[in-house]
Amino acid sequence: MFLGIDLGTSAVKVLLLDADDGVVAEASAPLTIQRPRPLWSEQDPDSWWRATEGAIAALRERVPGGIAGVSAIGLSGQMHGATLLADDDRPLRPAILWNDGRSAAECEELEQRVPTSRKLTGNLAMPGFTAPKLYWVARNEPDVFRRIAKVLLPKDFVRLRMTGESATDLSDASGTLWLDVAERRWAPELIEACGLSQQAMPTLFEGPEVTGRLRQEVAAAWGCDRVPVIAGAGDQAAGAIGAGVIARGRALLSLGTSGVYFVADDAFRPNPERAVHAFCHALPGTWHQMAVMLSAASCVSWVARVSGAKSEAALLDEIAASDRPSERLLFLPYLSGERTPHNDPRATGAFIGIDHETDRAALGRAVLEGVAFAFADAEAALRDAGSRIDGVSVIGGGAQSPFWGRILASVLDRPLVYRRGAAVGPALGAARLAQMGVTGEAPDRVCSEPPEDFVAEPELGLVDHYRERLPHFQTLYANLSESFRLASTRPASTSQEN
Image (cartoon, rainbow, N blue to C red; front, side, top):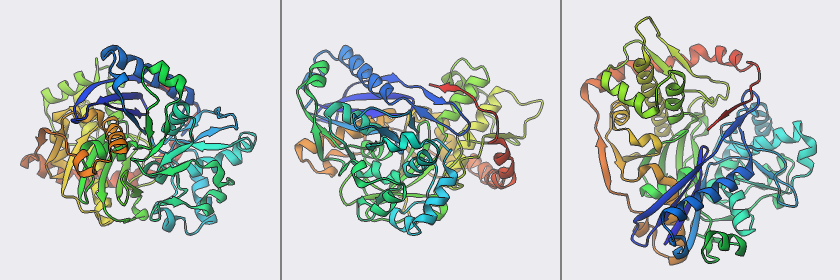
């Protein structure tokens, strides 16, 4: 048996996998995001550990004795988060998350200080990445910065609590802006540009490698042996492992809190000018390209909440019942800013075309279409990067809606394969990496594509309709970019999100 732990943004998910790739059980525990100021997004690292313990406890209730049979544990998690630790391994401040936009100025300065940064990392400096966040802390919280002994990514803070080891994997490290992605090693010049030393960095491992063993007290509390803990992967690479997306040209759409268009590759093919990410994959000698939207399924959660729908599922049913493609209404899904292709943390969401006839179903439909149009922008950027896209699987919480799949397939004008168990993709990928780490089995054998649940096919009438609508969506960002800048000066809030 193998255990996968996925530290997401809204929840920690855990999954038990048997030796035949069968999901035995899964469980989760919720997390909350704090937004104390405009553009800020933070979480308490200790809440990650509490949620992990809660999810493990829930799993033990569902499968008594199941964890006792675990032979290895793999980790996946939200990428880019800056978790700053003192020399006693305690957090110095809340972690700054992937969708935090405060460090735009620091991005520009870092690229000026290290002119070769795009060549080394294959990526633009973006506020979501880890390095600019540290540069911001150095300038704005110098007392905190002086006390930093170690910088960890979110899942690796959980690893530290599990094993006592400071380690990370190459796919997650690719999102720090401190990694030479082609050479798969730390880039000292980028680390030093942030005022840090390489001693502050965790040790690098390939995804299936063992990083340590479970601490005795943790093993006793969880009811298992001191089993190996595998390096694992960032959530998107882990999701790709779970979906069997490992060969060049295989791709996936991830409909989670954020939206990701991920394409596996056998070489490093960067295109930073279009805000495409070029990262190490979770397996040795592999890479991937990734277009990232900061809000995807979270847009559906938002519109359900503000429109007074009973639930997201109820809203989706309401939209499907009316089944009216938007004729005038358009939605920009930039609720947390945007990466690909705009790289603009100040971008905001917007509805265009509201009139007296606009109802809740129409707003919801426009949201589904707006996210789909943003994925079309993402696909165009990936093709410009030289990505070959042979087939696309869909994972994430939003993958549970066949109706949304019909819209996505029609906007992209390609069939989309929905995989069984798609909502738990990263946890499944983490468990598969754990399996490879202790059995030595080949990736081609372990990382099979899960069985098809259904295929969303493009519909001719919708394809033609959305082909006409897409250019109108694409002009809105340029037309509204100055308004986005002004909106970013709104008063501070102290909101929380689940």
